[in-house]
Length: 149
Ligand code: DAT
Ligand code: MG
Image (cartoon, rainbow, N blue to C red; front, side, top):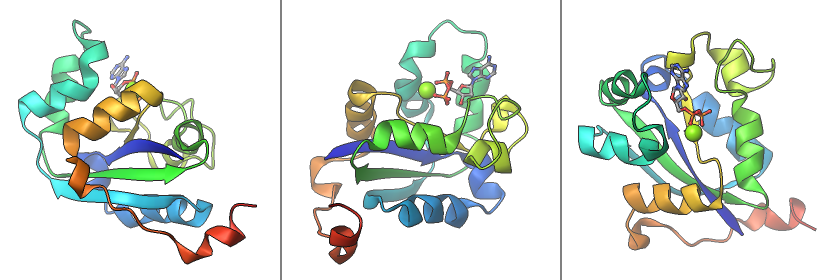
C-alpha cells in the first residue's frame, strides 16, 4: 500500500486546526503510520523543498516553516498520494475548491496549512527525511475490511 508524507505547517498549528486536518484523513479511511510534533531547523526545512532551489519564495517559505512547530506525519492507503493532494486542494487557496482543506481553511498561498508529497519518489524521500524506519508503525486497523473490498 502507498504511503505519503503530510505536514501541518506552523499556520495550521497556530490556528488550532491540527485535529480537523487529521480527522479528514481518518474519516476518509486512511491509516496513520507515524506522527511527530517538532520544530524544524533551517537545514531540514530546505530538504523537502529541494525542487524550489533558486525560486524567489524559497527563503520566505523556509523562514515560515521554521517559525514555529509543525506536525509531521506518514499516512497510508490505496492511492493516497493523489487523494491527499485532492483533499488539500490547489497550492493557492484562492484557487482551491470549497470542500478541500486549503479551500475551506486558508486564504493566502504563503499560509496554506498543509504540505503533502506530490509523487511516489518525493513521498519516499520526504518520509526518510523526517522519520527513521523504526518510527513507522506497522499495525492493522480492524476497520479495514469495511473500507477495502
Ligand atoms: P504544494 O505545497 O501544493 O505542493 P509547491 O510544492 O509548488 O506546492 O510549493 C511549496 C510551497 O511553497 C507552497 O505550499 C507554498 C509555497 N509557494 C509555492 N509557490 C509559491 C509562490 N508562487 N509564491 C509564494 N509561495 C509559494
Ligand atoms: Mg509540493
